[in-house]
Amino acid sequence: MNGDLAARLLGRTDLFRGVPAADLARLAAAAAPRAYAAGQTLFEEGAPAAAFHCIVAGQVRLFRWTPDGDEKIYQVLGAGKLLAESAVFADPAVYPMTAAACAATETLRLERTGLTALCRRSPDFALHLLASMSNRIVSAMNRIDQLTLSNALQRLVAYLVELHRHQRSLWLELPLGHGDIAKQLAVTPETLSRLLARLRKAGLVSTRRRTLVLLDLDGLCHYAGLPSPGAAPSGARPDGGMVGCCSLA
Image 1 (cartoon, rainbow, N blue to C red):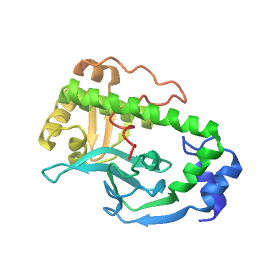
Image 2: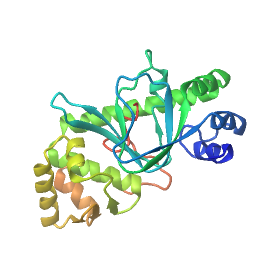
Image 3: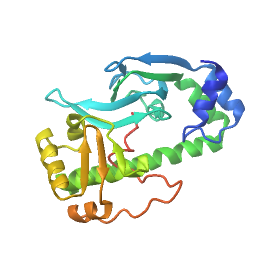
Image 4: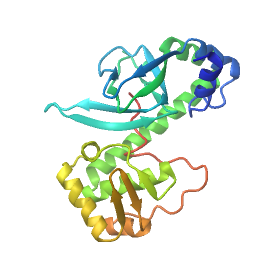
């Protein structure tokens, strides 16, 4: 991948949008293309956070291992998203989660030294980075609320509403299989299947493999005892939670 293409890819991410072309070119010049097969690990929890990634194609899941040896999935990220750009500033700089490819995935690997140097050169960018990290902390707090203060049905409906906000469609492409979604929602696969069956019987959703259609979004939220999400305005950013948080890895 040439430097111009790498710079354009970085410039489309939320963090680097608006960064001067010269700074992007300097970062892109040191970017190394990487390819990962499904299931292959990009980095492991506790390893030194020497680099961060920009996902070019594919999907990556971020997780921690539970004491029982299961994966606790925190987030799934796709093309155009950054991985571990926050972790490189930790002291000590270690990855707080493990990242693994969900499918064949391509990334740009960038050394942490390039990002820290950009912060030293540009106070405006450093402030922008702090704002980005603060927003993710708020999103993580929202996720904690959803996991600890809601019942299983509310967690599932909140997850579907956030997918709707991210994908901007009533036809949702589920980013994970039912087993992994169940882990992310802290329920068993059997409980998830029963909840989806309830929603289908109530005429609120329709499902086929990894496609789910929201037949009545307001009715779905009312059924779960949640406020109606309303119409997401054009260009609005999702407010974070089960889908778009925890990329602190």
